[in-house]
Amino acid sequence: MRPWVVAALLLAVAGVAASCAPGGASSGGTPEPGSGPRPAAAPAGPAPSASPVSGPAAPGPAADDVAWLRGVEELGSRLDAVVARSPGAMTRQTLHALAAQLRECTRELVRLGVPSARLRPVRALVVRACGEYEKGADCFAAAAEARSASGVQSRLDCGFAAARRGGAPLAAAVAEAAELRAG
Image (tube, rainbow, N blue to C red; front, top):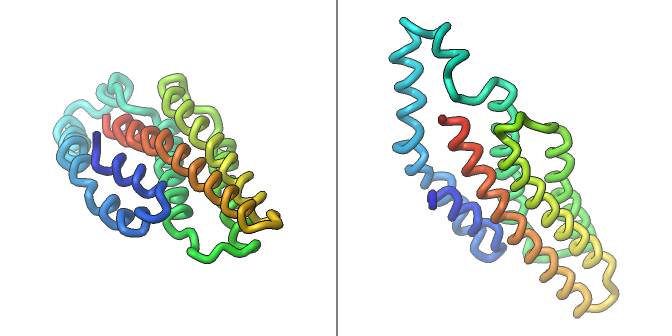
């Protein structure tokens, strides 16, 4: 499993997220050796002699697919940051803000639209992740309105558990997106 995926999964855990976020961003060593040199080397070599032939015959993603994949990767980074930056002191206002930020997953997925058939497996992972983030958002919104400390705590637990469950398929989607963009 790529270190980036492991870091993304760890970011979903609020206590560990703050210490893992910088490591996840800088430990992208696996994508660089595995996929970084290949895209850089492939266009540089065949481009002078066979660029018109390579374009249509190449198995790489189309421009629309690349934009969609970038959107998924950016979404993953934003949602990791939401969980990692969640404040220690949860007020009504911060809980509502946290809920709104988690709901961005679904809004962004709608904005990205339906990708090509080739990217549907990635979209299925993002849909699953966004469903969990929506559940987490509902829990955080309920925590903001809870009238007892135990009600708040159980809703917070629910929200962070849902964010962890959403983080796993989103991390897998981001990893898949990176591989598809590279190849």
